Image 1 (cartoon, rainbow over the protein chains, first blue to last red):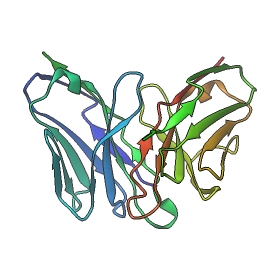
Image 2 (image 1 turned 90 degrees about the vertical axis):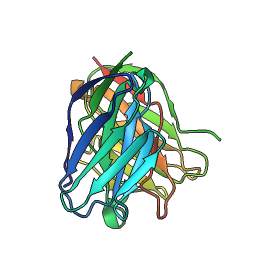
Image 3 (image 1 turned 30 degrees about the vertical axis):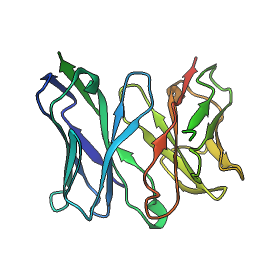
Length: 115
Length: 114
């Protein structure tokens, strides 16, 4: 089955700096890659996603890049703010067939933004 | 527009007991997936329900079962509880179709097994 590796496990930055979190996946058939933000005691919140037919997607301070050949994708947060502090999870799935909609998650990255 | 809701919020059970968790999907969604999130880890896929049937299943024993109702809400049942079943149980809903893999999570049910 699919395996998703996420790095780093913890990331500490100063307010205003950029943060990058990287994930690799094992199944070349995976074609959907969402990122979730989970604050302490709260639900995972979808912040951005990308499909395999595009290489990059941006939404204000957040961007995701995908390299299908290398089977890795990354989350980029620019101009970080203290409220960006949370656990971030990457995930992968392959649409269609019997695996439709099953998300396989990475282990998470604890991001801390210091004021 | 109501988001995904789950009940109860917290639950304490003892080993060997049975538990039922409930989920109402986001308005307009027809597919419900269940995940188990152990402390400090990413969510693990349990199973997914669509059209009142289990469409796919993760690596969880048969003690974990579910149901989907005609109104698309869903239940997760766990029998013969073990200490290791203590976790946050998350429900996620989605709309079948070309973007059916876009899932929105509920707040979860925190299950503690003593």
